[in-house]
Structure formats: C-alpha cells, structure tokens
Image 1: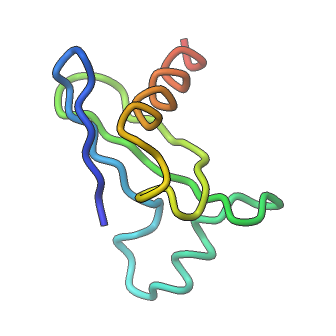
Image 2: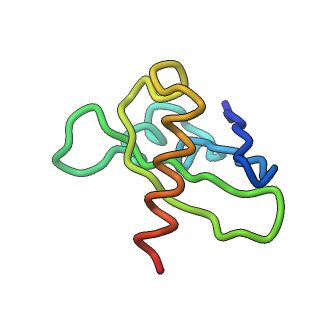
Image 3: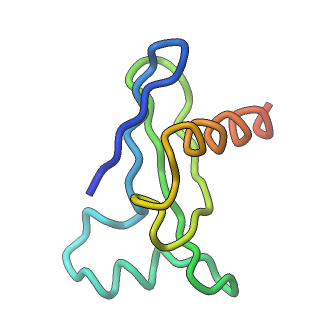
Length: 83
C-alpha cells in the first residue's frame, strides 16, 4: 500500500515498501528487509515532479508509526546525503 505526503514545495511523495509490486507477499517482505536490522525495511519514495526518488530505511510499521512530517524529514535527509 502506498502512502503519500506533500512537502512545502508542493511535491507529493508516494512511498511504498520495496518489492511490493511483485507476486508473493511474504517473499517480498523478506526481500525488502534491511539485512541485519530486524524489523526494518527498504521504502522507496517517488516524487510527483522532477525531484529524485529516494530509498529509506524505516521500521516495519512505517505506514502507521511515522507522521507526515517525520516521513518528509527522512526524505529530505536522504536527498541532502545524496548531494
């Protein structure tokens, strides 16, 4: 399931767990896990206009446990680290 958040530049970010579009749900969950980091998964956030997609490491219940502001902060940190 995708989660969307909009930043102050009016860019809407669509975030999904990596490998979520593939067939087998349990196998995809394992593929998306961050190796050696327990209940942590790779999440891909794609922007609505022009900016670069980012890959985040977030806890297993990221869809419910992170506020919009926290997700946007994670996205901004990753964008800054990539520069």
